[in-house]
Length: 424
Image (cartoon, rainbow, N blue to C red; front, side, top):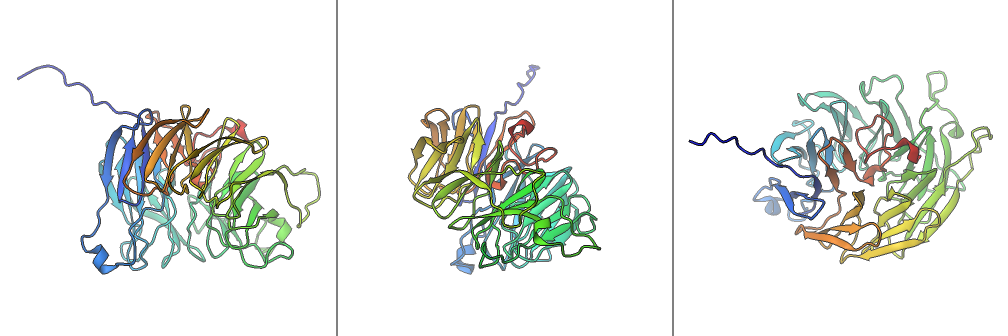
């Protein structure tokens, strides 16, 4: 028997993506080589039982503490969805996590994690937010919201911010949950001349103190609200301008989650435009409940923009339903370059080591150089890609996309791309 010491196992950085073929892929970001793949369990008689309900992944992956969390969303209100916990290096299954096996629970939002707690939001029959220990898998607390939670929550400090399709924005203590003393919620009122219908949130919040930014589908507004809500037992219903700093009306639904960069709020819209708003407000100026921010620029891209922008090195990267990925100059919105895929681009891009990565409905994951948009590599996943990728560079950093507004949470948050406070 040989006494030679076995060579150590080699691992490579991975860009992790999922799609609608029920397989999670980890690809080498340098060349597109497959590091591993993991196939989800699909009942053999699923199509017979529910022939009109497709099995798809809507939530994007979460990378946390060298584990990948993937929500297996069946889009079936009669079934309970599962979160798969995988080894980020090998793709091996570690644990299947079901928040409450005794209740129907549907997941459409990407889970987030911090301080060894995994936060899983419910949409559909059960509109609860669960905090689950990532080591013991014990539920630490649960909170019931007023409607489905489609958008991914955001962490900032020790608070969890999220919103519902019923039109309410929540702030919950990340450790104590429903018993937190600093919890608040806010449902933007119907205000002429701004809104004729109630807000409904599919966009995820983005935080840059002292404000939170979030877009609405139904009333087409981008909202800016204070992080520190003045609601107290002595002041249970503060006036609107004590909570809401401003709202900006677009001409279409806002599914895109905002990116915050250099004092700007950047987001896509269903009115075929990308907006860049100047968020600066003189802190000594009196609060005007009908104030609106100044647009720095507005770009028309000729189709719906549901992709969430990613900003890096003065360039805004965003996908469009006209099959293109755009690189826009953050100063004036000018098109630096555009790349044409062969399918819708609803996925959100991510930048890493000089390349921008994007998935398309044409089933391909693309790696493009950030200078000219030329293809470095492309890889056929055999399934439409709507989810945003994450990158594991093996250093402990988490490179998550802008699906929830990539500054989500700012300092201390575990779920954002590689936070640099000097960017804001």
